[in-house]
Length: 412
Image 1: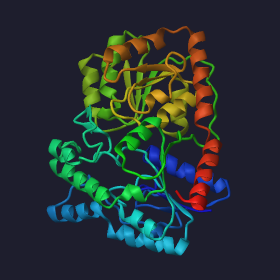
Image 2: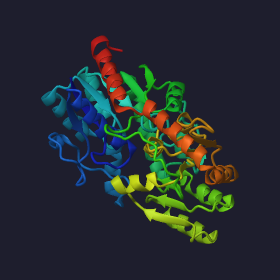
Image 3: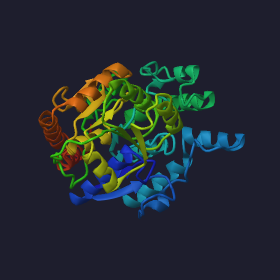
Image 4: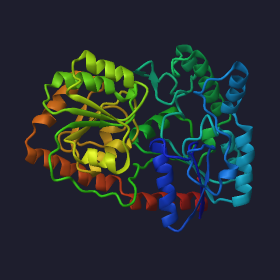
């Protein structure tokens, strides 16, 4: 088969790109041809199809009114993407198209092209953009489902898209375009990395096709082995943003009376707020901000930790940070939102805690800190075994290729 993979970024930026490139590698190693469609960027990985890529669109960059209006029209429906995607399809003749994050920059226009030429479409929903204009189901820090059944005007009414009236208007208009054009009804299969996301998309009734849950995979060559040593710090690694619950984590840690330090790895929008909170709580000697880490350096930090905490306060999907921690044999403490509880057997591979509950997170951190080494290592071993059964790359490749064949041969 020739598979066309689509994602708005063609460099590693987050979990969707990790999946996008990892899936391409899996498919190629399984003997299939893989081609790509994305946006131009200096950070892009080299690609034979880059001549078809669309011009870069950054909605967060400062711009005047004229450029803003022009950019807004591109966000709603990109004629450039439509033209270039059509050229790519006619030149390469893919058997199937697998979409990842395509909204806003690549737009519904590419779905229309694929539908016109009767090429089957698979879509992996890495976020909730298909049912929520601001993609997070968060309204000023609180979980919100007002738009779930198509009443997208709520996004504009509450200015929930990055606290901006204008951005909320654009996001509302974009969602309405997809609804009117029946974009998701032109897709042949939707894959969700969590069972929770499957339920939300089913509940929203945006698609006519099957929606299936397939947990994300870790890269081929991942070592599923618990480190046979108890670590000496609590670890958070990931984006430093409010919805990740990082402020709640700092509050919880300060209440926990935990003697082990807390290491925070990552960068993001609330870094300065985090620094202020640490000073306010007189925790500068116990909470260490290590900045962005990746590759071997990050793996060594994870391996030397006692446990990993992800206290997300939004509907998290299937974060790679927790997957990687479990593969390394680290017990995890997660909130009870979104897909996170699907990863953890409470009390066996880690703990599940009510979101935003600093007191309960403090109790869980203290438990991990005081747990006897024998019990902690047993919890780590259980986490590794669960990771191996859930995140195996070869198993994912077999399943997704089978799905492709079914769609191509039998239709919906």
